[in-house]
Length: 347
Ligand code: NDP
Ligand code: ZN
Image (cartoon, rainbow, N blue to C red; front, side, top):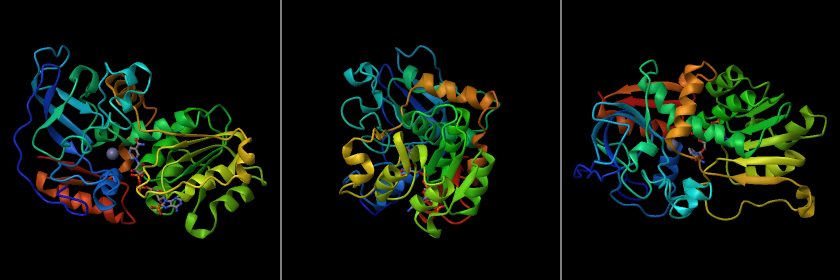
């Protein structure tokens, strides 16, 4: 990212490895919708000459003197969020905000990202996970952000057995919310999207009903499908700020809304007061950055190896070669009808 709205190539020094850190050589990377918000909507504010990208699988090239569990040559997954685990925020249970709001998100936000020949991982023992040989790099990329974020949406919405759930947005993140909702025991799962490739995947991950937001108000569509009752839980994983108000309208009293959408625009989310029971409807809204960390990543790896979730369905486009990153990023920006998520194999 050269500046807001501008991307290109830049030369930088190889990052320096601190005693707790690692330098990793990415072997596969994936652009994220968040990169698009950051560059073309300027959602984080000005960032100049910053290497983009926060989803990578790589080979460890160097470890610091205090790193215990990783060595040069190991194949690793590094989550998008790499907190400072000794911070007060981490001790308070919100490591993703270590050092300040959203500050656990370092790659392509507060430091150079992973679309590079080498990247720096802080607190390597806590922020990387060993990648089992049976998981292909392009599939493993989905462990960096898509799986943890989509599943975090289901945690924020606190899905219980038998809950009816609406997932607004079924790009790669929302699709993982659909899969996660099913794993957590949801009954009906309404998936909101329009691209056929995403709709097909949503059905495969267990959506029972598809709602096309281009075919009319989604609140009215949910009302019609539920006999006017609405749903127990809503996960927001796509759309603009208006989705917050829509979620408040469609969720039942006592319901929960989990938001993992990264709203690129500034301004207000606009909660409709009457639909919020004039503030007394017990409709909870929780929005969160995905938690990072090795333990969580290892658990997500075990969801794949145990056959509970197969994120390989998300990867619709695979590019080969470092120089293909701009093409993959542009694809993510354009979101053609056949795209869910692209991966770039670096060699
Ligand atoms: P995509 O753009 O691939 O998917 C967005 C989805 O929202 C699509 O299904 C799209 O439908 C749907 N949509 C678009 N407009 C509307 C609308 N008006 N009403 C309802 N649905 C709509 O995004 P990703 O899955 O890659 O990412 C989702 C969000 O999550 C992004 O904002 C991303 O930045 C954010 N994110 C947040 C993270 C976190 O930690 N909280 C981490 C990673 C990502 P269609 O089929 O028409 O395209
Ligand atoms: Zn991402």
